[in-house]
Image 1 (cartoon, rainbow, N blue to C red):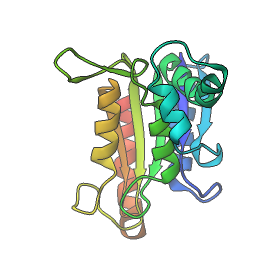
Image 2 (spheres, helix red, strand yellow):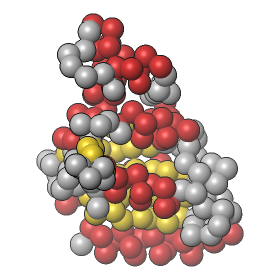
Image 3 (cartoon, rainbow, N blue to C red):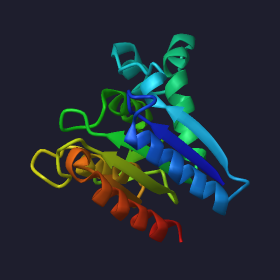
Length: 196
C-alpha cells in the first residue's frame, strides 16, 4: 500500500494541520506497517504556477518535443505519485478563506486532461483517479467550516471528485482560536472511526 502525504502549511514547526497529518500517518502505519509513505510537501517544493509554455505542452496533440517534455516533467512526476497511491492524507490550512497557493499550484499541476481526467463524448468530465481514499485535514483559526466565508472544503471536495476520488473524509479542525479542545476531541473520534 502507498500513502501520499501532502502538506501545504507554511508553518513547519507550529502547524496544526501538519501535526494532525503526522498523527494520521502514524496510525495508518500501525495498521499497515509495510505501507510506503510518499512525502509531498507542496509548501516547500517550489512548485511553479502554470505558464504559457506549460499550457502549450499539456494541450499539445502528438509527440512532445524536448522542451515540452522538460516543462511537463515535474507535473508528470506528481501525476505518477498520485496515480500510484492508495490513500491520500492531505493537510489544508485555510489562508484568507481559501486553500494555500502552494496547494492550488499542486492541484493545477495534477489536473491533466488524458491523465487524471478526460471528457466524455457529451462533454462531461470523467475522473481517471479511481479506487483511492482521501483523508483531508482542514484547519482554520476562526472561520467556521461550512460558513459563507469557507471557500476551502467544498472546493477540495469538488476538485478531488473531478479527478475521480469519491471516498473523501474531512477531519475538521476549524475555529482553533476558540474551540481547539472541542474540535480536537471530535476530530480524534472521527479519525478513530475512519481507521477502524
